[in-house]
Length: 226
Image 1 (tube, rainbow, N blue to C red):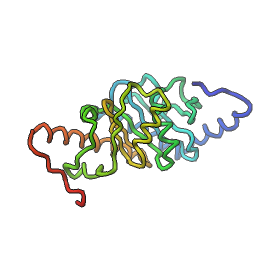
Image 2: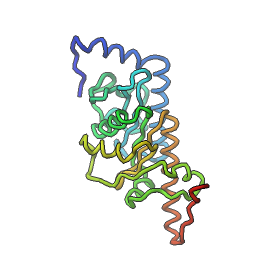
Image 3: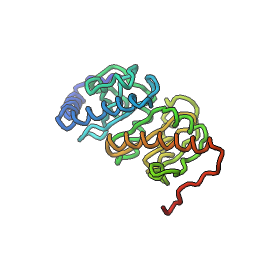
Image 4: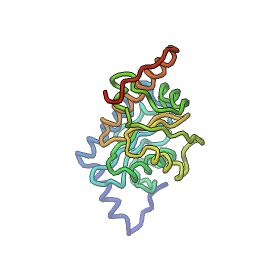
């Protein structure tokens, strides 16, 4: 959706574009683009599917997302698209992934503590999501997700419905990570760095769980008090 140019919102649009191009915002955009590249470098992307969003500093109702049709490895600070919470494009492109907008807009509206959200379809995470069960804390890294992640089990296809997006947000609650059944993983954090690290750690935890389960031996999770 292209943002309509009217006299009533022209000043606001200009204000947001200026905020999105301050030195602080530029640094955040570079971090966001780097997060896309790192996900791709680790082989955790899925074609043109998946998305990472980041609020504009000083303008919490606006955020950057990837342009539709670009691979994660092709995302740069220059080609990120700036949108508002209604899905209107303010600057940077003509098309976004609408499913990505639905999920991320709902998260940003419900979670003022979240500035960055990462959603992708990594191999181990996608496989583990088919089990529709929470992760077991089997190792040191996995312990970080103990009682701080959830499972959304209602898969009905690509998320292009506001009600489905709200269901995902409700399942996430105040946690920092979510397994979307038959779909993939989602992490949400205050910074790009934390959201990215959580995604990398969650994918690793899914892989560790799957490897341990494949042994056929009884699992011995780390006790909750530990």
